[in-house]
Amino acid sequence: MAKNAFAELSPSGDKIEVHFRYDPDLVACIKEVPGARYVSPAEGGPMWLVPLNLDIARRLTENMGPGLVLGRALKVWGKEATKREANLHALAGIDDVPAKELELNKKIPELAKWMRGYQRADTKFLAATSCLNLNEQGLGKTAEIIAAIFEGGLEHGPHLVVAPKTSLETVWRYEIERWTANLEKPHEVITYSGETVNKKGAIDEFWTCIDEEWPVWFVCTPATVRDGKEPFMDPAEFPDGWATFTIDEYHKTGLPNASGKKGTGSKFSDAVKDVKAQRRYAVTGTPMGGRPIKLWGALHFLYPEQFTSKWQWAKTWLEVSSNGYGQDIGSILRGREEEFYKALAPYVVRRLKSEVLPQLPPKQYVDVWCEMTPKQAKQYREFAARAEAVIEDQKLNALGILAEYTRLKVFADAYCDKIDQREVKCETCGGIDSEGCYKCLGKGTVTKLHPVPSSDSGKLPYLVDRLAEVGIDPEDPAGDACAIIASQFKDIVDMVHAYLNAKGIPTEKITGATSGDDRAAIQKKFQDGGPNSPRVVVMTTTAGGVAITLDRADTVHILDETWVPDDQEQFADRAHRVSRMHQVTVYTYRSTGTIEEYIEKVVGDKAKINVEILDVRRRGFRANMQKAVLDEQPD
Image (cartoon, rainbow, N blue to C red):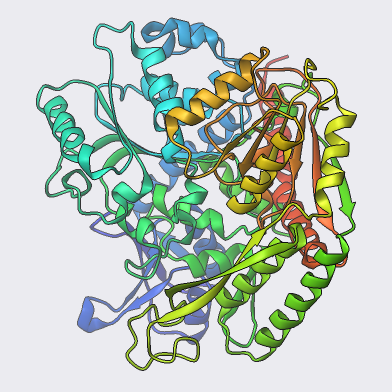
């Protein structure tokens, strides 16, 4: 228990100062508070500084006990912060807001009326605070962000959006122009996808809009802001900053790998750290990849002054253990699950399609276990033995081991009748270290094996059978059934595309090399149907996972899984959309006796963590909040 300890808001208003005479018991108590730091007399102490965060403040008062005296300014801050938290908790428990109760209804009434009840509720929450929008794929997150900006009265300022290249035009430009075209001042949308030839024009157009005080959105790719050299990224060059800063599909940007100290996280997280904005949003339907620590990077982006230390946050909520080389960060500490989600709730919007649209049938999942062909199995065993020998040699770093595993996945997909040898920069020294390494021997380059798959694959007969079962058969060219297919590998996509077309099944393909115009054309042909439309679209998992709707497909076929369950979910949600009430079946193909058996277990474990943290606990929290609201109603 604290004896004559005193806590007060710091003069700068961003920390809590704690003062007490030296006492080993009190020092032990405050050291358990996340982020607590001792300030010596030479630095202006003696005192302890604690991050200004409501959860940490609660931890401080709990650890120090009733003998801790709170200063007046800290009490005022605490009351305001508690009131704000309670308001956000209440908003988090709402499932509908009538259109007439929104400010949005006065500004864009057609949008307010078009939105579903849950979207209007989300808009109210998003307008009140910087937060994560983690709604499941296909629930209209982009429209919610636009609506929240108007609801919060921020529509006249400039807006920065960082999004995948594939969604700049088809998602963001389309949605912004759709809802602002009829305003007295329609919003200008400037998209920049990274092509140097268009850069100066896009930047000049943006500054012209700023000078003329025209409502403007600058929508660009993560690569555009990653180097942090653009004038609009620098508070000194752009002192007024942005009205809003939104990062779409943030789990793909490097934001989850942020660190509390600049220069120790990803380049992207460092670049966006100091960008000035009144409101920040981080958006994705798949935020964790089975690792709760990935949430911290986004929370740090939203509130860097509150979420200051990644390790302190991890130690507060997550299982942290030593693995002999460093520290492993696992799932939520047992017994703290409910408390964790309560602490997370003021920063998160999260809904599932099954909650807001119970009439939409849930996805059905079917595992298809495949026997490799004899040649494929023989080749797989040979390269599995080689990979095992290399890994056991213990000279590989984690990326090197992953590369060996990745090659095995290709052999589990198909027999490779050609294995190219390509000279690339050495993964270990990158061609920089003059000492070289065991791979490149000082040359800075290394020969990499690049397997080129053939159609001698144990998975293809199973795939063709499943397609025929739903009516995609060359014997029935006039059929109406459609499907989408995913592989992690472009070479597999190319092979399957050629194979199905040769079989007489009209098939298109989309990879990272497909232009935006071609993506849009393939989507339109597929969705419209007609005699010349494709029955199948085969895509790389990442290229097909965002910014495209292919809900004419009733079946989804995953030829090989990535290590992250979110990738497969995002791809399947190209077909499972709220725009069409139909049954979607997801087939996952795995070769028996291969690394794919291990990947299934890893992915399954991660998926369970996602559901437990993001959905099970959240539903319990929301139910409690809704009950509390009902209990407060007069009889």
